[in-house]
Image (cartoon, rainbow, N blue to C red; front, top):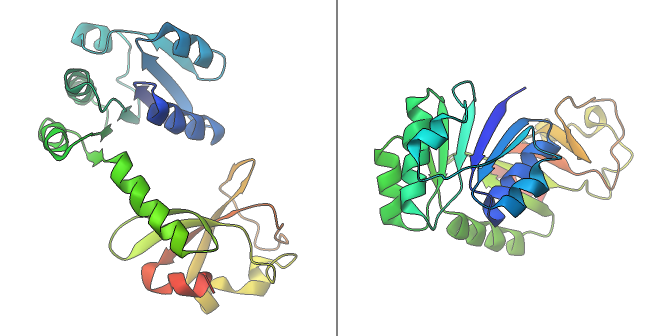
Length: 213
C-alpha cells in the first residue's frame, strides 16, 4: 500500500485526499485549519494540525517513510517552499506541488519538486476535451503519446467481457481498472461489463477517436 502526505487541505487538497482514501491508500493530511483536520480525523490515516511555514513542525510529523508528498497550497509560496524542501530533506522520493503561477512553479521545481501542476490550467484543458467528447468522464495525459481516460461502457459493450470485446485489437485500448465504488486494479477479463461501472483505460492518443465513436 502506498503512503501519501498531503500538505494543505483546500478544495484541491481535499479532492486529492478523497480520491486517494477511496483508492485504499495510506493518507496523512496536514493543515492549519482545525475544522478541516477534525473533518478528516475519522477517514484519513492521520490528520494533523500544523504550521506549514515552520520547518521544524513539518519535520516533527515523521514523514520520512512516505512514498509521496502532495503540496497543495497555491496561495502560500512560503508554506509551499517549506513543505517541498523538508519533504525532500526527509527523503520522500516523489513530491508533487501545486502552483498558482509560472513563477511559483519555477521556484518549486528549482527547490526539488518532482512534478509541478497548474490545476486551473489543467482543468480547463480537461473541460475542453470533455466538451469535445461525449464518452469520457475523465481525461489525463501521461505523455505526448499516452493518455488515461475514464468512461462508462458503450451500450454495445454492456454485458460482454473484455475477452469478447477485444478492445486492445479493435481500439488499441488497455483497460487497467474498474471504478466500482473504489478502484479495482485487477480486472477479470471474463467479467461482463456493467453499464454503471466506469472503465479506466490507457490508450495511445491517436486511438482516442476509436473509443469516442
